[in-house]
Length: 627
Image 1: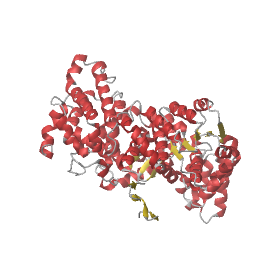
Image 2: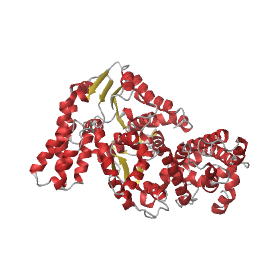
Image 3: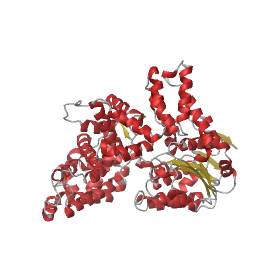
């Protein structure tokens, strides 16, 4: 319902008209325009508000008694209430509850009317969408601009054209930093607070992000959290106004918070209900072994939820005190399962560890079915219910939220990669298998006008986002974006079949000649066309050049003369070069009008292009001549 107010004979509200005597009629629009919404979407592909909501779903609930101690802490209040800007850095080891502390602080700001100029971002190393400096700065910009429509429109007008050709390119972070600085220096914006959690999980350009923090610390109150890392500490030493809150030095407060956390969860464990003596024993053992680590408690509690009452004491007694040993115990248990269950855990862990982001169950199903295709010891086809059961088989190291599979914590993935990767799976081989599975899945699913839109004039904003059950792309979204990255990594695997994939008219060349436009269409429909398509084709071009020039490093290494390799890949190379130019030249129309791919883009493509030669008549047969 629109919010209107009457004032001096005028109705004021969204899209209201104000009459100024006989001289002027001014339209006041307080809604965010479609152009502004699109600009925000370009700035940041994620929304920090929903990232926080997801974290609280995964790690919650947020217990007031467990985090409120920091709101009373001297250093926090000194940073919060002083008029000077500066940095408060909360640092501590993994699993000590830093993320939940920052969630609690943000919620407190929001509940106490301090959210107008508040922005925040939660980094996560396991998700490429939220683990780069560009993602952090873009998310902070988005948070700030959403609350300031006037400022949003001005920023869009000043930077929209610059971002068109640069966003997510080499200069993206530089431009985003310029935008951020222009926002915080706006005279109408005061007392800006920026919160960045898990700074150590910013995997790309973290130093550039720290430089921005240092540079703007005189205009912004920065609240940061990270593990104890020397590189971060060394750079933050340059901040004149800096406070450090070390969780290790607040061990007593953390211990009290842990007790609150344990008590809350103990009462929810089915095996402990109606047994006060067993509850007391569990409280005592968990409290003595936790060592101030929330994550350790969460893992043990998860295990107790699956334990019968008669076995609770044994589980509590045998569980190790430190986090790494606990991870080791969980993985060791999977090794003691039956052969089939053990193989399921191995395959599942190999997929989720190698994946570039958390996988939806439907996406995971693609790789699972591909792995056991033709294996008589496993089902011919698995379904979603099977995948849920498989995740449970892996123990509490994995969790499912909103039908997406996550590691329980970044440290859990670190443990698998550092201590178990070679024992569980060879990483290059897994990349190769995920590339093959992606290529097969895309070949099966992709088709022209896959959403049945028919109208080439339909704008991307007019295409409703589909729910998972009705989206024909749901199972291959990950494949469409990341298949080339897995190819580039899998190419290093000594068993890579170069003759099967890299020669003219073989697997990859055939895929491009049949599905190239469908693949580009899918990226556009997924709002992932730019820069993903151009970046993927650039990586593919580089790989082809490498193979043509140097041969392979696998079993066929240097066995084929260079001239022969060049001759056998000329068609694939030409198609890739033309495809890259096609995507670059028609980036804007295809990004905003997906079906223009089959109309204006093909019509204006050069006659000599492999893209036009390959698809012109096919497109005409399916869609008719260009209008």
